[in-house]
Image 1 (cartoon, rainbow, N blue to C red):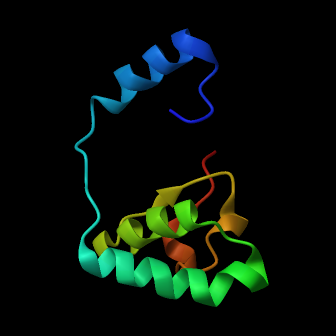
Image 2: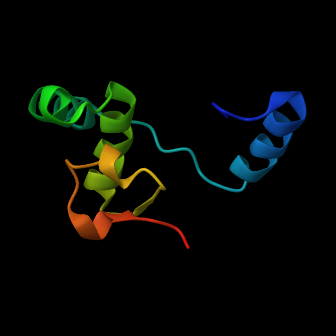
Length: 84
C-alpha cells in the first residue's frame, strides 16, 4: 500500500492484496533480518524493510518479484526476479 497514489490507489491495492494469504514473520525471520541488516546495511545500503521482506522469501523459498533487484543482495539470485 506504501506508494499507492491516493485513496483510490489504496482501494485498488487492497482489492488485489485480499486475494493473497497474509504470512507473518516468525522469531527466526527476525533473527535472519538482523543478520542480513548487519551484513548488508553499510555495504549495500539495504533497509530494514527490505531485509524483513527478504527473510520471508528466504524461509519459504519463494521468489520475490521486484524491479529493485539491487535491494536484495542477501537472497540467492533465483529468489529475486525482475518482472517482465
